[in-house]
Amino acid sequence: MSQFNQNGSDYDSEGLPPSVRRYVYQGKEHFSRTLQFERECFQRHSYLTAEFFVFSIDTFTFRRDFSDTETPIRGIRTTFNPRTNILIVKMVTHEHHTVVRAFDLAIDDVLRPMGMDEKVLTYAGVDIDVDGISKQPDWGWGPRRPPLGQPRRRPTVVIEVAMSETRAKLHRDVELWVDPERGNMNIAFTVKVNRNCAIITIGKWEWDYANNQARMSQEIEIHKNEAGDHVTVSGAPLIIPFNLLFLRYAIPPKETDLTIKGEKFEYIADLVWELQFADF
Image (cartoon, rainbow, N blue to C red):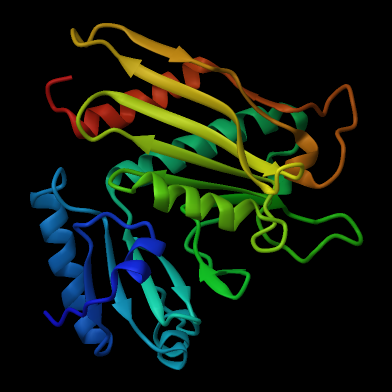
C-alpha cells in the first residue's frame, strides 16, 4: 500500500484519529484493494483502528472516478476538499447503518399521523456542495417540494454517526453543515457510539448567530448499567421544529413540531449494543 505523509498542521486540521492511514490515489482498482484492506483491518481491530482512511487525489480524477460515475461505491461516505486535494473516506459499518435507519423510521413514525411522511426526501450517499467541499452526510432529510423562493432541493437536517471519530473531527463536520455561509443546514445531529461500554450520546446542533458558531441545543444520552438489566435515557424527548425541517411553519392542529420520545432511543441503542456486545 502506498502511503503519504503530511505535516502536522495539515493533519490536525482534519481532526482525524492518529490511526487513520493515508494513501496516494492510483486508480479505481487501487482504491478497491485499499477499501478491502481497510475494511478487514477495521473488522479485526475495530477498537484500535478508525473507520476512516485518506487519499491524496486531484479534482479532475475525483470527479471522474467518484462524483460523475453512474455506479457509486456502496458502503462509504466521502468528503473531498479541492483546495487541499484530500479525499476522506468513511466506511459505513453495521452500527452506522442501524442508527441512521432506525432514526429515519422514528422520524417517519412521527410524520405519518400528520400526513407528512411522503413530503420528505431522504439523502444518503449524496454529494452535497458545502462551501466548495463535496461532502456526503450519513443521512439527511429535507422537504420534497421546498416553498417558493427557497433554495433547490437539499437536506435541511443531517446526521453524522461517530465511532472512532474524534471530537475535533465531529465538531468540524458540524460546523461545516450548520454554518450559514457553508452548509447552511438548519440542524445537524451527531450520534457518538462508545466502543468500550454501552453509552450512546446524541447531540442536536444549530447555528448560534449571536456568537457565530455551532451550538449544541439538546443532548440525549442512552446508558446501560454494568449488570446489563437497566437502560437510562436522559435529555429526551428530542424536538425537531417543523419549520426547520420543512422551511415553513406548521399548520395546526394536525402539523406540529416533531417529538421523538425516549423509548425510541432505547430501542435504537439496544439494536446497536446487540451488534457491539454479544453478551448483552
